[in-house]
Image (tube, rainbow, N blue to C red):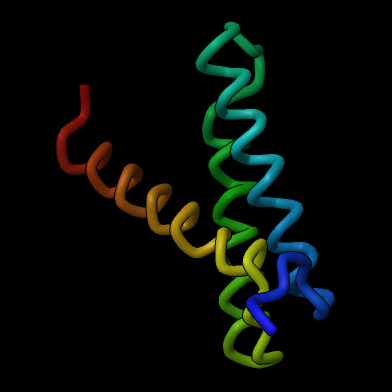
Length: 88
């Protein structure tokens, strides 16, 4: 049996939902000038990252949508760090 797609744990479900909402809102913000501040959208992705870490470490949840939250969160952390190092 392969890797499950949907998470089983509560933290995994929250992580998947936050990450999916982050991806959708960022896509809409890039395509159309969405009047939502970017830091609020980034906060959703970071919250998904934290919940994903909790689901993976504490609950041993290895679902694909839970694991999706990790690269999303890492992109946000790297992006924020680079924005602080090289402001424009």
